[in-house]
Amino acid sequence: MINYQHIQVEQFEKIGTIRLNRPKVLNALNRKMVHEIVNAFIEMDQDDDVKVIVLFGNGKAFAAGADIGEMAQNDAVDLELLNQFADWDHLALIKKPIIGAVHGFALGGGFELALVCDLLFAAEDAKFGFPEINLAVMPGAGGTQRLTKLMGKTKALEWLWSGEMMSVEEAVRFGIINKIFPKELVVEETIKYAKKLAEKPALSVRFIKEAVNKAIDYSLYEGMQYERKNFSLLFSSEDQKEGMRAFLEKRKPEFKGR
Ligand code: HXC
Image (tube, rainbow, N blue to C red; front, top):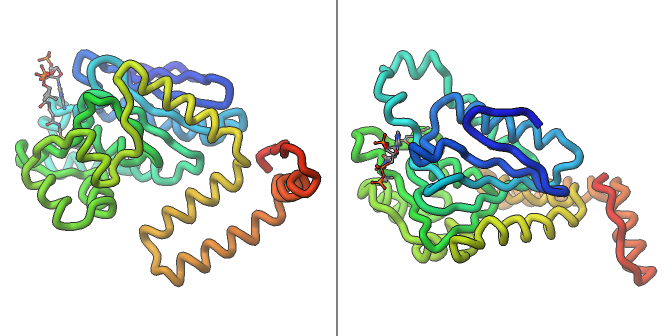
Protein backbone atom coordinates (compact mmCIF):
# COMPACT_ATOMS: atom_id res chain seq x y z
CA MET A 1 0.00 0.00 0.00
CA ILE A 2 1.08 3.58 -0.76
CA ASN A 3 2.46 5.92 1.92
CA TYR A 4 0.34 9.03 2.35
CA GLN A 5 0.99 12.27 4.25
CA HIS A 6 -2.37 12.87 5.93
CA ILE A 7 -3.90 9.41 6.15
CA GLN A 8 -2.74 5.93 7.14
CA VAL A 9 -3.84 2.88 5.18
CA GLU A 10 -3.60 -0.72 6.31
CA GLN A 11 -5.04 -4.09 5.47
CA PHE A 12 -6.22 -6.73 7.96
CA GLU A 13 -7.16 -9.93 6.17
CA LYS A 14 -9.92 -8.80 3.76
CA ILE A 15 -10.46 -5.41 5.37
CA GLY A 16 -8.81 -2.22 4.10
CA THR A 17 -8.64 0.57 6.67
CA ILE A 18 -8.22 4.29 6.06
CA ARG A 19 -7.39 6.44 9.10
CA LEU A 20 -7.59 10.21 8.91
CA ASN A 21 -4.36 11.46 10.41
CA ARG A 22 -4.12 15.20 11.12
CA PRO A 23 -5.01 14.83 14.81
CA LYS A 24 -3.57 18.24 15.87
CA VAL A 25 -6.31 19.99 13.87
CA LEU A 26 -9.01 17.38 14.62
CA ASN A 27 -8.45 15.84 11.18
CA ALA A 28 -9.54 19.01 9.38
CA LEU A 29 -9.70 18.05 5.73
CA ASN A 30 -7.36 20.02 3.51
CA ARG A 31 -7.52 19.39 -0.23
CA LYS A 32 -4.43 17.19 -0.31
CA MET A 33 -5.95 15.01 2.40
CA VAL A 34 -9.24 14.63 0.51
CA HIS A 35 -7.23 13.72 -2.60
CA GLU A 36 -5.34 11.09 -0.60
CA ILE A 37 -8.56 9.67 0.88
CA VAL A 38 -10.08 9.35 -2.60
CA ASN A 39 -6.92 7.73 -3.98
CA ALA A 40 -6.86 5.23 -1.11
CA PHE A 41 -10.52 4.36 -1.73
CA ILE A 42 -9.88 3.86 -5.45
CA GLU A 43 -6.80 1.73 -4.74
CA MET A 44 -8.75 -0.50 -2.33
CA ASP A 45 -11.73 -0.70 -4.67
CA GLN A 46 -9.42 -2.14 -7.31
CA ASP A 47 -7.59 -4.50 -4.94
CA ASP A 48 -9.05 -8.03 -5.16
CA ASP A 49 -7.82 -8.84 -1.66
CA VAL A 50 -9.89 -6.04 -0.06
CA LYS A 51 -13.59 -6.82 0.36
CA VAL A 52 -14.74 -4.08 2.77
CA ILE A 53 -13.29 -0.63 3.53
CA VAL A 54 -13.38 0.86 7.03
CA LEU A 55 -12.84 4.59 7.60
CA PHE A 56 -12.03 6.25 10.94
CA GLY A 57 -10.06 9.08 12.49
CA ASN A 58 -6.92 9.24 14.65
CA GLY A 59 -6.91 11.40 17.78
CA LYS A 60 -9.86 13.17 19.39
CA ALA A 61 -12.20 13.40 16.38
CA PHE A 62 -13.36 11.79 13.17
CA ALA A 63 -13.02 15.10 11.28
CA ALA A 64 -13.98 18.65 12.31
CA GLY A 65 -14.66 19.79 8.74
CA ALA A 66 -12.84 21.22 5.78
CA ASP A 67 -9.64 23.07 6.70
CA ILE A 68 -10.89 26.58 7.44
CA GLY A 69 -7.41 28.11 7.18
CA GLU A 70 -7.05 26.76 3.64
CA MET A 71 -10.58 27.71 2.56
CA ALA A 72 -10.34 31.24 3.96
CA GLN A 73 -7.76 32.11 1.29
CA ASN A 74 -10.02 31.33 -1.66
CA ASP A 75 -12.49 33.31 -3.69
CA ALA A 76 -15.25 31.87 -5.88
CA VAL A 77 -13.09 31.82 -8.99
CA ASP A 78 -10.33 29.89 -7.16
CA LEU A 79 -12.90 27.33 -6.05
CA GLU A 80 -14.26 26.93 -9.56
CA LEU A 81 -10.80 26.56 -11.10
CA LEU A 82 -9.62 24.13 -8.41
CA ASN A 83 -12.54 21.81 -9.21
CA GLN A 84 -11.96 20.24 -5.80
CA PHE A 85 -15.37 18.60 -5.72
CA ALA A 86 -14.39 16.25 -8.54
CA ASP A 87 -12.58 14.31 -5.80
CA TRP A 88 -15.77 14.05 -3.77
CA ASP A 89 -17.67 12.83 -6.85
CA HIS A 90 -15.29 9.85 -7.08
CA LEU A 91 -16.36 8.72 -3.61
CA ALA A 92 -19.86 8.03 -4.87
CA LEU A 93 -18.41 5.62 -7.45
CA ILE A 94 -16.73 3.25 -4.98
CA LYS A 95 -18.31 -0.18 -5.43
CA LYS A 96 -17.15 -1.94 -2.27
CA PRO A 97 -18.91 -1.46 1.05
CA ILE A 98 -17.58 1.44 3.13
CA ILE A 99 -18.17 1.41 6.88
CA GLY A 100 -17.36 4.47 8.95
CA ALA A 101 -16.41 4.29 12.64
CA VAL A 102 -16.98 7.77 14.03
CA HIS A 103 -15.83 9.14 17.36
CA GLY A 104 -15.69 12.75 18.55
CA PHE A 105 -16.61 15.45 16.05
CA ALA A 106 -17.90 14.74 12.55
CA LEU A 107 -18.62 18.28 11.39
CA GLY A 108 -19.05 20.02 8.06
CA GLY A 109 -16.91 18.26 5.45
CA GLY A 110 -16.19 15.61 8.12
CA PHE A 111 -19.92 14.88 8.40
CA GLU A 112 -20.13 14.86 4.59
CA LEU A 113 -17.34 12.28 4.50
CA ALA A 114 -19.18 10.19 7.10
CA LEU A 115 -22.34 10.39 4.99
CA VAL A 116 -20.45 8.87 2.04
CA CYS A 117 -20.13 5.67 4.13
CA ASP A 118 -22.68 2.91 3.49
CA LEU A 119 -22.95 2.07 7.19
CA LEU A 120 -21.97 4.22 10.15
CA PHE A 121 -21.03 2.96 13.59
CA ALA A 122 -20.41 5.61 16.21
CA ALA A 123 -18.86 5.97 19.64
CA GLU A 124 -21.00 7.35 22.46
CA ASP A 125 -19.09 10.66 22.28
CA ALA A 126 -19.66 11.22 18.53
CA LYS A 127 -21.23 14.54 17.51
CA PHE A 128 -22.54 15.27 14.04
CA GLY A 129 -23.35 18.66 12.57
CA PHE A 130 -23.09 21.23 9.84
CA PRO A 131 -21.66 24.40 11.45
CA GLU A 132 -21.00 26.02 8.04
CA ILE A 133 -23.81 28.51 8.61
CA ASN A 134 -21.75 30.05 11.44
CA LEU A 135 -18.99 30.75 8.89
CA ALA A 136 -21.55 32.30 6.52
CA VAL A 137 -21.18 29.44 4.04
CA MET A 138 -22.98 26.11 3.57
CA PRO A 139 -22.11 22.46 2.93
CA GLY A 140 -20.54 21.95 -0.50
CA ALA A 141 -19.73 18.24 -0.69
CA GLY A 142 -23.21 16.72 -0.64
CA GLY A 143 -24.29 17.60 2.92
CA THR A 144 -27.60 19.29 2.06
CA GLN A 145 -28.47 16.48 -0.34
CA ARG A 146 -27.47 13.41 1.65
CA LEU A 147 -28.82 14.70 4.96
CA THR A 148 -32.18 15.58 3.38
CA LYS A 149 -32.47 12.18 1.72
CA LEU A 150 -31.83 10.51 5.08
CA MET A 151 -34.00 12.60 7.43
CA GLY A 152 -36.40 14.55 5.20
CA LYS A 153 -36.66 18.26 4.37
CA THR A 154 -37.97 19.80 7.58
CA LYS A 155 -35.54 18.04 9.92
CA ALA A 156 -32.58 18.65 7.58
CA LEU A 157 -33.34 22.37 7.44
CA GLU A 158 -33.56 22.51 11.21
CA TRP A 159 -30.04 21.07 11.58
CA LEU A 160 -28.51 22.97 8.66
CA TRP A 161 -29.92 26.32 9.78
CA SER A 162 -29.05 25.91 13.47
CA GLY A 163 -25.51 24.62 12.90
CA GLU A 164 -25.94 22.66 16.13
CA MET A 165 -24.46 19.26 16.87
CA MET A 166 -26.50 16.08 16.95
CA SER A 167 -25.88 13.42 19.61
CA VAL A 168 -25.56 9.73 18.73
CA GLU A 169 -29.03 9.06 20.13
CA GLU A 170 -30.48 11.67 17.74
CA ALA A 171 -28.35 10.34 14.89
CA VAL A 172 -29.75 6.82 15.41
CA ARG A 173 -33.30 8.17 15.60
CA PHE A 174 -32.92 10.02 12.29
CA GLY A 175 -31.37 7.03 10.50
CA ILE A 176 -27.96 8.69 10.16
CA ILE A 177 -26.03 5.98 12.02
CA ASN A 178 -26.53 2.25 12.48
CA LYS A 179 -25.10 1.42 15.89
CA ILE A 180 -23.57 2.99 19.00
CA PHE A 181 -20.56 1.50 20.79
CA PRO A 182 -18.41 2.49 23.76
CA LYS A 183 -15.60 4.71 22.46
CA GLU A 184 -12.80 2.23 23.12
CA LEU A 185 -14.63 -0.51 21.17
CA VAL A 186 -16.02 1.31 18.14
CA VAL A 187 -13.16 0.57 15.71
CA GLU A 188 -12.74 -3.02 16.91
CA GLU A 189 -16.49 -3.70 16.64
CA THR A 190 -16.63 -2.08 13.19
CA ILE A 191 -13.79 -4.26 11.94
CA LYS A 192 -15.50 -7.32 13.45
CA TYR A 193 -18.67 -6.44 11.53
CA ALA A 194 -16.67 -5.74 8.35
CA LYS A 195 -15.04 -9.19 8.60
CA LYS A 196 -18.46 -10.86 8.61
CA LEU A 197 -19.57 -8.81 5.60
CA ALA A 198 -16.32 -9.67 3.81
CA GLU A 199 -17.32 -13.37 3.88
CA LYS A 200 -20.53 -12.76 1.93
CA PRO A 201 -20.50 -13.31 -1.86
CA ALA A 202 -18.89 -10.09 -3.11
CA LEU A 203 -21.03 -9.62 -6.24
CA SER A 204 -24.26 -9.83 -4.25
CA VAL A 205 -22.86 -7.31 -1.77
CA ARG A 206 -21.89 -5.00 -4.63
CA PHE A 207 -25.17 -5.23 -6.54
CA ILE A 208 -27.24 -4.76 -3.39
CA LYS A 209 -25.29 -1.55 -2.64
CA GLU A 210 -25.87 -0.31 -6.19
CA ALA A 211 -29.59 -1.14 -6.13
CA VAL A 212 -30.16 0.50 -2.73
CA ASN A 213 -28.38 3.64 -3.95
CA LYS A 214 -30.63 3.67 -7.02
CA ALA A 215 -33.67 3.60 -4.71
CA ILE A 216 -32.63 7.08 -3.58
CA ASP A 217 -32.67 8.55 -7.10
CA TYR A 218 -35.06 6.40 -9.12
CA SER A 219 -38.82 6.03 -9.11
CA LEU A 220 -40.07 2.72 -7.66
CA TYR A 221 -40.74 1.36 -11.15
CA GLU A 222 -37.30 2.31 -12.50
CA GLY A 223 -35.64 1.00 -9.36
CA MET A 224 -37.41 -2.34 -9.66
CA GLN A 225 -36.34 -2.69 -13.29
CA TYR A 226 -32.76 -2.00 -12.21
CA GLU A 227 -33.00 -4.50 -9.36
CA ARG A 228 -34.38 -7.20 -11.68
CA LYS A 229 -31.50 -6.83 -14.17
CA ASN A 230 -28.98 -7.27 -11.37
CA PHE A 231 -30.93 -10.21 -9.94
CA SER A 232 -30.71 -11.94 -13.34
CA LEU A 233 -27.07 -10.97 -13.78
CA LEU A 234 -26.12 -12.74 -10.56
CA PHE A 235 -27.29 -16.01 -12.14
CA SER A 236 -24.22 -15.89 -14.37
CA SER A 237 -21.85 -15.82 -11.38
CA GLU A 238 -19.95 -18.84 -10.06
CA ASP A 239 -21.01 -17.93 -6.53
CA GLN A 240 -24.71 -18.20 -7.39
CA LYS A 241 -24.15 -21.76 -8.67
CA GLU A 242 -22.11 -22.60 -5.59
CA GLY A 243 -24.56 -20.95 -3.17
CA MET A 244 -27.60 -22.82 -4.45
CA ARG A 245 -25.72 -26.12 -4.94
CA ALA A 246 -24.35 -25.94 -1.39
CA PHE A 247 -27.86 -25.35 -0.02
CA LEU A 248 -29.24 -28.36 -1.89
CA GLU A 249 -26.28 -30.53 -0.82
CA LYS A 250 -26.70 -29.33 2.79
CA ARG A 251 -23.14 -28.00 3.12
CA LYS A 252 -21.46 -24.60 3.67
CA PRO A 253 -20.85 -22.68 0.43
CA GLU A 254 -17.36 -21.63 -0.62
CA PHE A 255 -17.64 -18.30 -2.35
CA LYS A 256 -14.99 -16.95 -4.72
CA GLY A 257 -16.33 -13.45 -5.25
CA ARG A 258 -17.03 -13.98 -8.96
C1 HXC B 1 -8.98 24.08 10.59
C2 HXC B 1 -9.42 23.31 12.69
C3 HXC B 1 -10.73 22.93 12.29
C4 HXC B 1 -11.10 23.16 10.93
C5 HXC B 1 -10.48 22.45 14.36
N1 HXC B 1 -9.32 22.99 13.98
N2 HXC B 1 -11.36 22.40 13.36
N3 HXC B 1 -8.57 23.87 11.83
N4 HXC B 1 -10.19 23.73 10.11
N5 HXC B 1 -12.30 22.79 10.44
C6 HXC B 1 -8.12 23.21 14.79
C7 HXC B 1 -8.29 24.37 15.75
O1 HXC B 1 -8.03 25.60 15.10
C8 HXC B 1 -7.24 24.04 16.78
O2 HXC B 1 -5.97 24.39 16.29
C9 HXC B 1 -7.29 22.52 16.84
O3 HXC B 1 -7.90 22.08 15.64
C10 HXC B 1 -8.12 22.00 18.01
O4 HXC B 1 -9.39 22.64 17.94
P1 HXC B 1 -10.04 23.47 19.15
O5 HXC B 1 -10.98 24.43 18.56
O6 HXC B 1 -8.99 24.00 20.06
O7 HXC B 1 -10.81 22.29 19.91
P2 HXC B 1 -12.13 22.41 20.78
O8 HXC B 1 -12.11 23.62 21.67
O9 HXC B 1 -12.31 21.06 21.38
O10 HXC B 1 -13.31 22.68 19.72
C11 HXC B 1 -13.61 21.70 18.76
C12 HXC B 1 -14.54 22.25 17.67
C13 HXC B 1 -13.89 23.52 17.05
C14 HXC B 1 -15.90 22.61 18.27
C15 HXC B 1 -14.73 21.14 16.64
O11 HXC B 1 -12.54 23.20 16.72
C16 HXC B 1 -14.59 23.99 15.82
O12 HXC B 1 -15.62 24.65 15.92
N6 HXC B 1 -13.99 23.71 14.65
C17 HXC B 1 -14.54 24.17 13.37
C18 HXC B 1 -15.71 23.32 12.96
C19 HXC B 1 -16.32 23.79 11.65
O13 HXC B 1 -16.77 24.96 11.56
N7 HXC B 1 -16.35 22.89 10.65
C20 HXC B 1 -16.93 23.25 9.35
C21 HXC B 1 -15.89 23.81 8.44
S1 HXC B 1 -16.56 24.29 6.90
P3 HXC B 1 -4.91 25.21 17.18
O14 HXC B 1 -3.78 25.47 16.24
O15 HXC B 1 -5.62 26.40 17.69
O16 HXC B 1 -4.56 24.23 18.28
C22 HXC B 1 -16.70 22.88 6.02
C23 HXC B 1 -17.17 23.04 4.60
C24 HXC B 1 -17.10 21.78 3.83
O17 HXC B 1 -16.41 21.82 6.47
C25 HXC B 1 -17.13 22.05 2.37
C26 HXC B 1 -16.88 20.81 1.52
C27 HXC B 1 -15.53 20.23 1.60
